[in-house]
Image: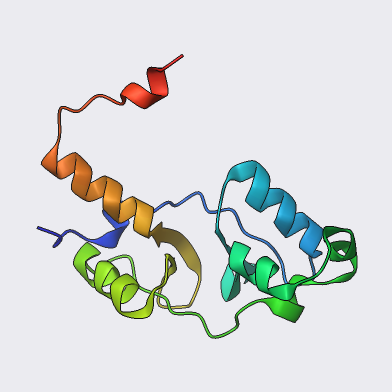
Length: 140
């Protein structure tokens, strides 16, 4: 049931930051775009990831974020997957490691997408309930 490739459900228009960006940039993206994971790239190469949890565990006031660079707190050893790997394999990685987002890279470590636990939940829900209506989006 989850034997389709990750590329069928991954987000390809990925919001990224650079290692030299200030944390204030990250905070702005996280809160305005409602994201939890932002890949860190140099050019197209994935070099790290920064998450909303990274900001929380930093324990600094938001007014200090202009003086802290992404590269100072980003996770450098990042679990990744390839676009041709199966959705079920991504689910297994999430369950076994308590991750919530995985960057998707090509053979040269270029970022080509990201998949999250929400993507998998939505995928499974839509398979189970293909004719559902999103009532909460239309509630006024």
